[in-house]
Amino acid sequence: MTNTRRKKLPLQLGYSTNVHPGEDMKAVYRSLEEYTIPIRKRVFGSGPCGLELRLGIGSAKDLATRKARLEFRDYLEESGLVLFSVNAYPLSDFHARRVKETVYQPSWGSPQRANWTSKIGRIVDEIAPEGIKVSISTLGGCFRGHGHTPAVLRKLAANYLSTLEVFLDIEAATGRTMVLAVEPEPETTFETAADVISFFEEYLCPLALRKWKKRGTKSRIETDLRRVFTVNIDTCHLSVLFEGQVSNLRQLQKAGLELGKVHVTNAVALRNPYRSPEAFKDFRGMDEPKYFHQFCGVDKAGRATWRGTDLGQLPRRLTRGEHPDVAELRSHFHVPLYLKRYRRLYTTRDDTELALREVIKKRTCSHLVFETYTWPILAGGKKRKEKLINGISREYRWLLGCVEKLGVS
Image (tube, rainbow, N blue to C red; front, top):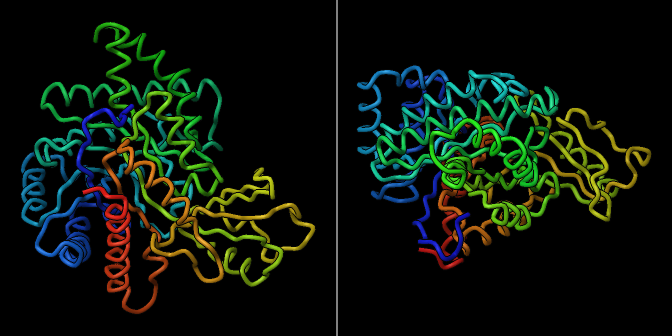
């Protein structure tokens, strides 16, 4: 694991373009022109800024030719956008009218997920600036409702391994360090750091030691594996499950697993739900038809007593007979980073700041990306484009302010 004694890499900051439609390269170019470049100019003036690009199957198909890749590389360079990270979690349409469980498809139980992620890796190697380390974030296994047995976990390990081998081959051929960053999320195979560690130690590493014997000694194989198999911590996801940000980060460090990236995100929270029917109405009212918004409630001792895959599973009105021991509810609904309150609700910004402080001070990760993909929902109505540009720019400044406050240049 990266530690304080290693050379500290410069921080790369950006926002994830999964907030904009991008199912083909026509849509990608349009969103970069209409949103990303204006945001760069507003925050950085004439200077460059980092980019986490969302690439799915459709846009990857459009980049199948070398000509298309080189044209896109030149466009990014001319636009002052430094590609350092890719969001390859949603491979299909992330802006369909209904996404919900389709965001997990194909899962890592399918060779299709491995094949497309590998193709995206090869594409990005040719597009990203020379010498830049690239992180590619992805689904943590599969949706738990689709299976969580040893047989499923073995299948996940095999498919992960095929993509990780491609990333090592890229490194050998071009010198590019490219890492896969699996993203723990409620209701998926990996919910916490402990889940990733268990999978790595019980399934992924043993399989690599059997299949990669030609790569060298046991020590060499494990070193290679740990270099390319990393974790993308999304701070909202851990907050929703009331998981300690710092404790999860330190568990990964102790287990020798690298942080490939941090998604800096903010969730909504409802404290003492029985005391404020109006606040519960705000919380329940965030249910919408596009995305899953998993929720979790804990009692005063911090024990989880109520969980669900979507806000629509909550009653419209909360009565004392419904889980009377719940002291706080949280939901996986991303809200802007700069908010400590949203309507009559709180946010988990304090949790997010704890994670940032841990990561930035110890420099356990150099890739920081904010990912409020719900902006099109939050900014509905008139002047949506202006609201998105203003809001994302404000999030950028908030994150830059945190970095400056912690004394990191």
